Image (cartoon, rainbow, N blue to C red; front, side, top):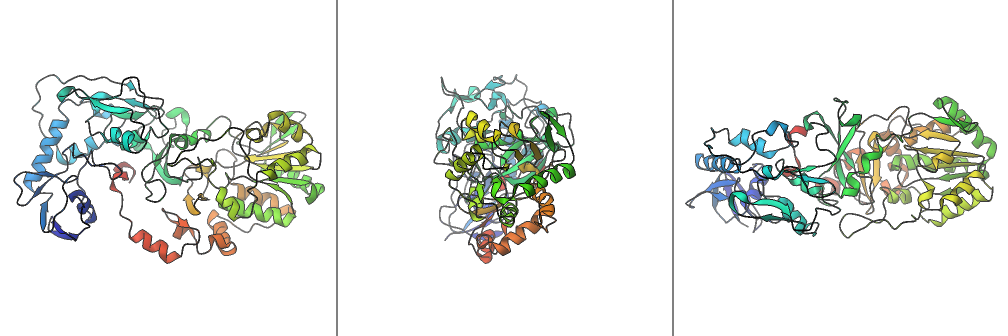
Length: 554
């Protein structure tokens, strides 16, 4: 294998490795716009120029393969001067209003100008004017004047989404990024083009002018949109509450994971946060009296619900678990059901409309934790749900506990209404109102997924962490804490104080989670059945993805 020396440091690399990749192995970061490890290499922007001994002029590090004995200088006067000149060329026609750009704070043009540029402009001619606020599609806006023609977005549409909407048109100063005639940037992964745009050219309509990125906090988590379990970062705005209409969660960004989602996420999952700060949120325990909803305390509602369960007896209590719940919630819920001797239990629904799916990231199962449901011992057969609804319609249930589900997504609305009308006590536990909660007698507000610590198990059996990004809204609580409150008067003791305590008990008692802890799960997850030393080895071999590290978020 070839050896290369970069800035006096020597490293052995695989044949075919480029200079920029070899530099990363040494921890040397070279500037880049067009280079992205998930896309083909085009060597187009020229900002990664380096000096290579025995070569007459600077070379692009992203496109130059390593040869044995190659000696590279990334900080020589010749290399730095070349990058500075490239930057000046890229900025010739760029607007000078950087601080008002919607991508200010995440713009690599700004970053590199401050690191490499800082020249006195020699520009005396008028700049070439290009179009602003070009509507590219349902989610993406283009400011052509800010585009530096790195073609990342074009290659993404050609190589990843394979939808081929974008191209570079015209030549020289008049070259522009634009959709092909008659096309729009309208595919299920379109906003990834915004993520990889290194400057302020492509922006997200939903987030555009909503908040400045330097006021946002980032929390690593897992997308709840389907069973893939894409790794994401939740961006929250809790300091400037007058922005974004007071929404705390303002956007989701993909987080690099080499074995799950790499650098990408779908648009469906990206906008799954909308319900978190929605007016439909349940923020206080409620009971229905004379047809009116009355907000009350947890003590009052828990006493009333537990009294109904006690008087009904286990045979007449039904329970609908949900694959939207965390492993911690499901573990405690299974104990709750088993200790009370509940046998009328269902969990999964067969949706009336066939869910969107593809061969890339989007799974047909639009729940994040169906595998966790299976591991914790709940039935996956959707027939169990049909049977439970029939039992309700037949008047066999006195109490029905429904977690998260909107049953009208799987059954006709009239059938659901008729069945629930036959149940004297319907208890809905979830974060948002829906058609099913409207038929309940008690509403118990649950924390939404960005408000909870816990884990999901994806379709492949990988257990991954979600972390609390914002506190629960109002009096909402994590489901396992609600069960702790309900369980005490029923003799079901839940001796846990934190989500970590619940998971530790889960790992001790359930073979599917054996050997796991929040520490072994870390940022990359822990595959069920994987030994702890294998997890450690996998992490040691992990090369940090510098492209996803945005300085403003650390």
